[in-house]
Amino acid sequence: MISTLDELLAQLGTGWWDVIHYVVAIFCLSLPASQALGGAFFAPAVDYTCVPTVPSATASPEAASETSAERGGPSSWRLAVAPENSTALNQCSYLVESAQTGEVAEEACSEWLFDNSTFATTLTAEFQLTCDRAYLRATYQSIYMLGMFLGALISGFAADRFGRKTTLLFGLPSFMILSNATCLLPNLSALLFSRFLLGLTMPFITNISYILVVEISEPRLRPHLGILMMLPWAFGMMILGGFVIPFLEVHNIGSFVIPFLR
Image (tube, rainbow, N blue to C red; front, side, top):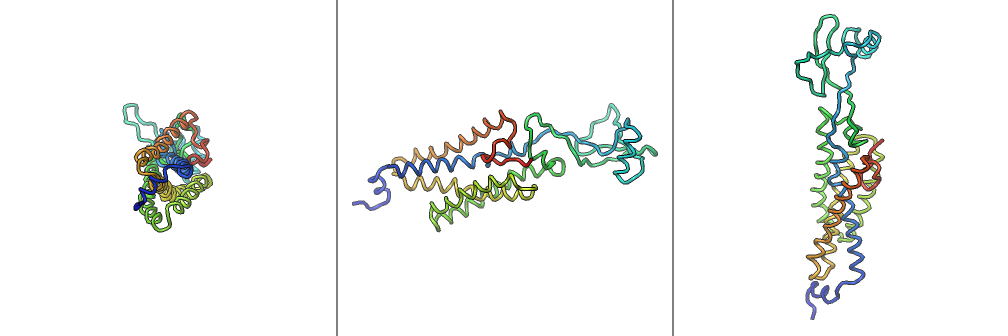
């Protein structure tokens, strides 16, 4: 007489109904991999050069006059030329020199040129994530992880309350819609909020699909399926690196990862 669920599953064996669930779970687990660690491609640390807003010491008087007018003052400031034996300033500021008094002042840089030899487009260049805004590159990744932490707690309660399949059917479309909608977001604040929501919905896919597969499988297959369910995640990370690096333009990957605003 069958007295436990495991005995019932062992008696029923593995059929097409189980295989369909395995295939769906593998597909679900392959999607979030590119989002989870994609910050290395989306918002990498790239070299940049400060673009001063004042003319150099060798600029023409017309250029100096035009730039000084934009600065709201007389034609009295120009870009200072550092001595040959001095230490170069970082790319967050530059020196300006008064043509009248010789006074040298430090100005904060507000515009940069970014090196696009590795990545043609990045969030770092798109939103000028340098100097006092450099912390936003780390925020882009960490806010996703914060969403994952909270999502893991919420998805567990939701799976017990509403069922595994219902929770998974909520998480999968939500994640796919958010991933594709990101390309329409107009600013960095909206993008970071979307990243948080993506992290929040990710455990609704990864954790619940894994639990669902293990629970419907006969006991002898569970160790093997546990390993099999994690392979799509590894393949997703391999595809991310192998597909992005040759093309060097992350936004060409489309909805597989977050496309960049252009």
